[in-house]
Length: 119
Length: 111
Image 1 (cartoon, each protein chain N blue to C red):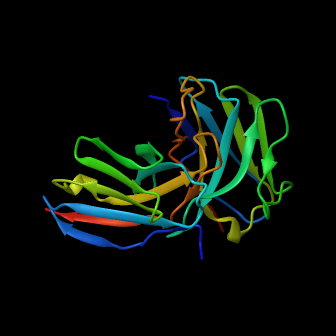
Image 2: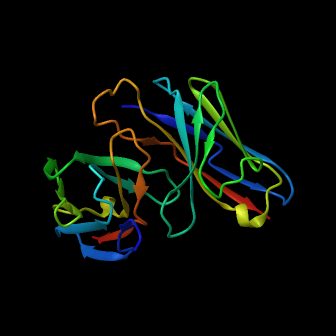
């Protein structure tokens, strides 16, 4: 099945620094990837949709200058949390759909997430 | 009213029990329903997906959708300790649409 790999799985950084998270589709090409954030005991919240070769689409309330997304190739999207603050501490998860699954049943496949702790 | 409601639990059952996990939703446009399993500190793993109403079975898992009641269920038969995880429902108008997730129900299966 489709595999999405995310790196790093866990990162601690100091307030004010930037952190980059990578998301790769390992056995398929993804023109679109999705970035979610999950706080403890909360549902997954879509932050932005990453589009290969064009600008990302951000959900309402998500600061595009703070959460920089780059989708430079069909297998790699990156999320950079700039000038991180403790309130940015969360579990960030990327996902993608396998375009080979062209029926209505085209579920999202998730990476294993990145736990960010900002001190 | 939130678009998707899911009891966070925890739901504790003994090994071998039948587990019923449920979500309710308010958006009648939702046609595509999924269940994900999420272990601690891991990303969600797709368990099952269904389109429109009806039942779908896969091994010990059965997904059920009742669109008239806006209610979906996931049944786990012969539950195992390895089933202990958080189960998230997700849904959307189509297979390519943005999904709305429930908060997840934590399931604990004791040996």
